[in-house]
Amino acid sequence: MNSKKQSYDRVAKVFDFLRGGDMRRWNPHQKSLFEKLQGNVLYVGTGTGLETVNFPPNLNITAIDLSFQMLERSKTRVEKYPGHMNRCQMDAETTGFRENSFDTVVTVCVLCTVKHPVPCLKELKRVLKPEGRLVMFEHVLSRNPFYALALKTMSNLTEMLEGTYLDRHTVNNAEKAGFEILSHKNVYLDIVKALVAKPV
Amino acid sequence: MIFKIADFFIGTFSGGAMAFCIHMIIPAEINMFLGMFLGGAVGMVMMLAMMLVLMPLFGAFEVMIPLHINGMLVGMASGMLTTLSSVTSNHLTILGALIGFSVSIYIYFSNKYLTQS
Image (cartoon, rainbow over all chains, first blue to last red):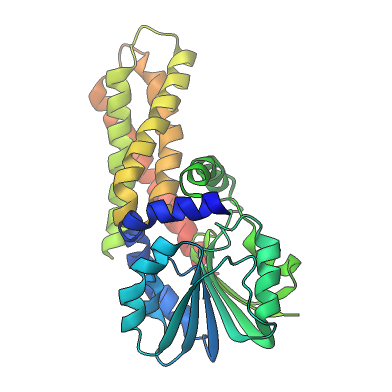
């Protein structure tokens, strides 16, 4: 966990630059997905808060991230959010919140970075109310062999550089953790996905 | 719209550039099989360098997927063809650009199908 934290602390300075292209591509898709956020929201893996501009206003959001440097850099965006948002440094695999605390849990490119995705999803299920929703904007391994080969090859490099895995089966992992997928939309090929799930 | 044009440009330009560089780097006297292997390796190294520059501007996956396929396909084809004395750098650059453009077309329609289904 510490090495992952350190690697994200290190990358925090250039994180906005690195994600610039992704955000320009993904903003409209995220805006449409995040319309489903409601009530008390847990925003997992806040990073530098790039996605806050796509959140609907007037939500009560708890934003968590493992990296202190990332949270520091999210300060301006969090302050500009037209609603209530507080930040905590916390590991998504062991959050420390009480059971059934949130109406919505939102993850953006988180389940590709946590070390153990299924236990992490189980933890998110624990803090989510039984009638709550898990909203995910994630990238996964493609079923197309050409794309999958590219992702698997690059995954070795991204894992080493910043601890991101490009070969995760997030849809299956969510089902393994006890979620039922309610909506499933491909954003780019079958790699970047917008998903909504509910606990079962 | 700008991103759609950029995707085709990235595919075509990277294919052409890889083919040209491979023709410059790999000696024509070597065995065709070795040329193919070296071409693939040079293509992958070039792919990584181009990715570092293009990903922050145009998006990680939208750059990574076409460049990776181009790195392998254009790299291996150019490496192999470089060993033929009749093939010039112009021929290879055009071939590389055509392969890159074809890869972009494949990805465009694949994306259209997957995101609309």
